[in-house]
Image 1 (spheres, rainbow, N blue to C red):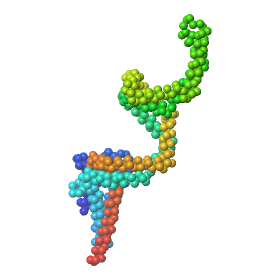
Image 2: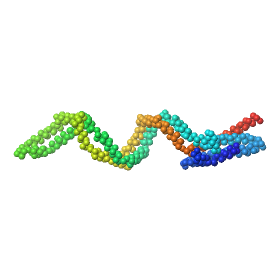
Image 3: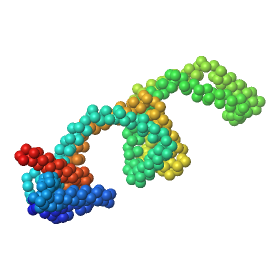
Image 4: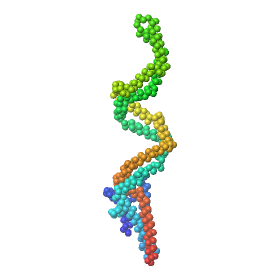
Length: 448
């Protein structure tokens, strides 16, 4: 027992070699690659190890003294039995705790150094446990249903500071995107979209369908009225212009007073005609104009010659250089507007965006139906992710543990839970002492 005790003391200070041959450092020392936040845990672990070791030393001292004096003082036999049991309990529990993290006394006893030797198996088991018990659709849905994410997110979004923060982050994202995007690439995309959706399709049929609907519903009558009213007003104020046009076009041999009579007659007839068209919605001119426009709408849809003429006009209006220029000017306009809005906290776009965020947040809080829809969408999305990628998510744990160094893993785990495990050694010392005392007392009562 004295040998075991000396080896226990040696194991507390002797450096160990990791599975890769590296020195793990003295037991209880600060493990490698740990952050400063772990210093307090390391200090606490050292204190608990010192306390457990101190109890073992105390039991050994008591055992030595009581063993030496028990013949002189028979009552010390009970003290010896208690201290002997305390040492046995302390050493047994020291072995059990140490066997989790390293080889006790450097001896490669089977089923010791469990964490370094079975690190990968432990990581796989932990991943399977998380996948089975946490990454299930039922668990995720129940948790999300109890949280009420939409309402909480709405309350946060409704705050002015939160909405402003999102607007600020969105502005930063816009500026970053503008720096990443190449102008030529964006122009090419816009040009291809314009060509695919605007230039390449024939214009005749869609324009004809739109015109047919407009003419059928009579929306063009207001434009006709405007033109007729303008013509009537012009006629009322341009009598001399009409007379001059007639005089200028009459033969030289016609007397001047005849030109005047003819001019007045032409003006009067034109004026009467225009005012008749203006006042009579069923005038023959209006009816013929409606018929012409409706025929034109039909021809644009069904007459190949008219469709070809419309496409020819389109090609003349939007030839290749013009499409390229249109795409460039469109992108420059969009880019300038977005950058100006992103850089100016008081821009109209940013103010409206912030207001929209706050309004959406308030609606999430005040509208149970909307909040329910958002919660269901979140729940369905989370369920889909869990159902589809649960194994990949859980494998993060397994893969991460596999990449860890075995010795460092053992040290880090010991740093996190070792302080509590030292209570096993302390309790083992106390329980062993009580058990030894009880066993010796019962045996003495029976056999003496």
